[in-house]
Length: 141
Image (tube, rainbow, N blue to C red):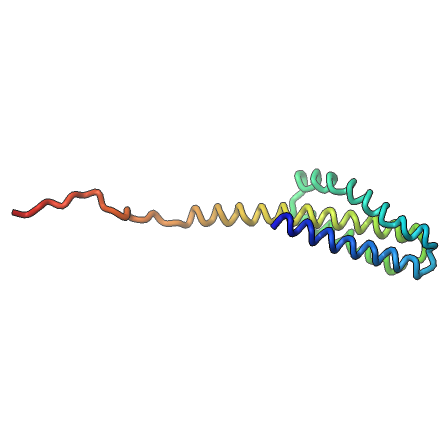
Protein backbone atom coordinates (compact mmCIF):
# COMPACT_ATOMS: atom_id res chain seq x y z
CA UNK A 1 0.00 0.00 0.00
CA UNK A 2 2.80 2.42 0.87
CA UNK A 3 4.62 1.75 -2.41
CA UNK A 4 1.37 2.25 -4.30
CA UNK A 5 0.74 5.57 -2.51
CA UNK A 6 4.25 6.77 -3.29
CA UNK A 7 4.00 5.85 -6.96
CA UNK A 8 0.58 7.41 -7.38
CA UNK A 9 1.63 10.57 -5.54
CA UNK A 10 4.75 10.82 -7.70
CA UNK A 11 2.71 10.37 -10.85
CA UNK A 12 0.20 12.99 -9.80
CA UNK A 13 2.91 15.45 -8.82
CA UNK A 14 4.76 14.96 -12.10
CA UNK A 15 1.59 15.66 -14.04
CA UNK A 16 0.86 18.78 -12.04
CA UNK A 17 4.39 20.12 -12.42
CA UNK A 18 4.51 19.47 -16.16
CA UNK A 19 1.15 21.20 -16.56
CA UNK A 20 2.45 24.18 -14.60
CA UNK A 21 5.43 24.38 -16.94
CA UNK A 22 3.11 24.36 -19.95
CA UNK A 23 0.78 26.97 -18.42
CA UNK A 24 3.75 29.18 -17.53
CA UNK A 25 4.99 28.92 -21.12
CA UNK A 26 1.54 29.81 -22.47
CA UNK A 27 1.24 32.87 -20.22
CA UNK A 28 4.41 34.38 -21.61
CA UNK A 29 7.21 33.01 -19.44
CA UNK A 30 10.16 32.15 -21.72
CA UNK A 31 10.55 28.43 -22.42
CA UNK A 32 14.01 28.30 -20.81
CA UNK A 33 12.66 29.68 -17.55
CA UNK A 34 9.44 27.65 -17.66
CA UNK A 35 11.48 24.45 -17.90
CA UNK A 36 13.25 25.26 -14.61
CA UNK A 37 10.04 25.53 -12.57
CA UNK A 38 10.13 21.82 -11.77
CA UNK A 39 13.58 22.23 -10.20
CA UNK A 40 12.33 24.84 -7.71
CA UNK A 41 9.34 22.77 -6.75
CA UNK A 42 11.33 19.54 -6.33
CA UNK A 43 13.96 21.28 -4.23
CA UNK A 44 11.32 22.81 -1.97
CA UNK A 45 9.56 19.45 -1.69
CA UNK A 46 12.80 17.94 -0.36
CA UNK A 47 13.08 20.75 2.19
CA UNK A 48 9.48 20.66 3.37
CA UNK A 49 9.23 16.91 4.03
CA UNK A 50 11.54 16.98 7.09
CA UNK A 51 9.84 20.18 8.25
CA UNK A 52 6.42 18.50 8.20
CA UNK A 53 7.92 15.57 10.07
CA UNK A 54 8.97 17.89 12.87
CA UNK A 55 5.62 19.69 12.82
CA UNK A 56 3.62 16.45 13.14
CA UNK A 57 5.64 15.53 16.24
CA UNK A 58 4.82 18.80 17.99
CA UNK A 59 1.37 19.78 16.66
CA UNK A 60 -1.84 17.75 16.61
CA UNK A 61 -2.72 16.18 13.27
CA UNK A 62 -6.02 18.05 12.88
CA UNK A 63 -4.20 21.35 13.25
CA UNK A 64 -1.72 20.18 10.61
CA UNK A 65 -4.60 19.40 8.27
CA UNK A 66 -6.02 22.87 8.71
CA UNK A 67 -2.60 24.40 8.08
CA UNK A 68 -1.95 22.51 4.87
CA UNK A 69 -5.48 23.25 3.61
CA UNK A 70 -4.85 26.96 4.17
CA UNK A 71 -1.51 26.74 2.39
CA UNK A 72 -3.20 24.89 -0.46
CA UNK A 73 -5.80 27.62 -0.75
CA UNK A 74 -3.05 30.25 -0.80
CA UNK A 75 -1.19 28.36 -3.54
CA UNK A 76 -4.34 28.24 -5.66
CA UNK A 77 -4.82 31.99 -5.24
CA UNK A 78 -1.23 32.55 -6.31
CA UNK A 79 -1.66 30.27 -9.33
CA UNK A 80 -4.81 32.09 -10.41
CA UNK A 81 -2.97 35.41 -10.40
CA UNK A 82 0.38 34.14 -11.72
CA UNK A 83 1.56 36.02 -14.78
CA UNK A 84 5.31 36.09 -14.16
CA UNK A 85 8.06 33.58 -13.55
CA UNK A 86 8.44 34.61 -9.92
CA UNK A 87 4.74 34.15 -9.18
CA UNK A 88 4.84 30.64 -10.62
CA UNK A 89 7.82 29.88 -8.37
CA UNK A 90 5.91 31.14 -5.30
CA UNK A 91 2.88 29.08 -6.28
CA UNK A 92 4.93 25.93 -6.79
CA UNK A 93 6.80 26.43 -3.52
CA UNK A 94 3.48 26.64 -1.70
CA UNK A 95 2.20 23.64 -3.65
CA UNK A 96 5.32 21.66 -2.70
CA UNK A 97 4.70 22.50 0.95
CA UNK A 98 1.12 21.25 0.65
CA UNK A 99 2.07 18.02 -1.10
CA UNK A 100 4.82 17.26 1.42
CA UNK A 101 2.37 17.86 4.25
CA UNK A 102 -0.37 15.79 2.65
CA UNK A 103 1.91 12.85 1.88
CA UNK A 104 3.36 12.90 5.39
CA UNK A 105 0.07 13.37 7.20
CA UNK A 106 -1.79 10.62 5.39
CA UNK A 107 0.74 8.13 6.79
CA UNK A 108 0.45 9.56 10.31
CA UNK A 109 -3.35 9.49 10.17
CA UNK A 110 -3.34 5.95 8.74
CA UNK A 111 -1.10 4.76 11.58
CA UNK A 112 -3.38 6.43 14.14
CA UNK A 113 -6.48 4.82 12.63
CA UNK A 114 -4.92 1.35 12.51
CA UNK A 115 -3.62 1.51 16.09
CA UNK A 116 -7.01 2.83 17.26
CA UNK A 117 -8.83 -0.05 15.55
CA UNK A 118 -6.43 -2.57 17.05
CA UNK A 119 -6.91 -1.05 20.49
CA UNK A 120 -10.71 -1.13 20.15
CA UNK A 121 -10.78 -4.66 18.73
CA UNK A 122 -8.54 -6.05 21.45
CA UNK A 123 -10.58 -4.46 24.23
CA UNK A 124 -13.96 -5.55 22.85
CA UNK A 125 -13.28 -9.26 22.41
CA UNK A 126 -15.16 -11.10 25.14
CA UNK A 127 -13.49 -13.93 26.91
CA UNK A 128 -14.50 -17.09 25.13
CA UNK A 129 -15.07 -20.38 26.86
CA UNK A 130 -12.44 -23.02 26.20
CA UNK A 131 -12.99 -25.12 23.13
CA UNK A 132 -12.24 -28.41 24.90
CA UNK A 133 -13.39 -28.55 28.51
CA UNK A 134 -10.77 -29.81 30.92
CA UNK A 135 -13.19 -31.65 33.21
CA UNK A 136 -13.05 -35.37 32.97
CA UNK A 137 -16.16 -37.42 32.55
CA UNK A 138 -16.46 -40.31 34.92
CA UNK A 139 -17.52 -43.61 33.56
CA UNK A 140 -20.68 -44.89 35.08
CA UNK A 141 -20.74 -48.52 36.08
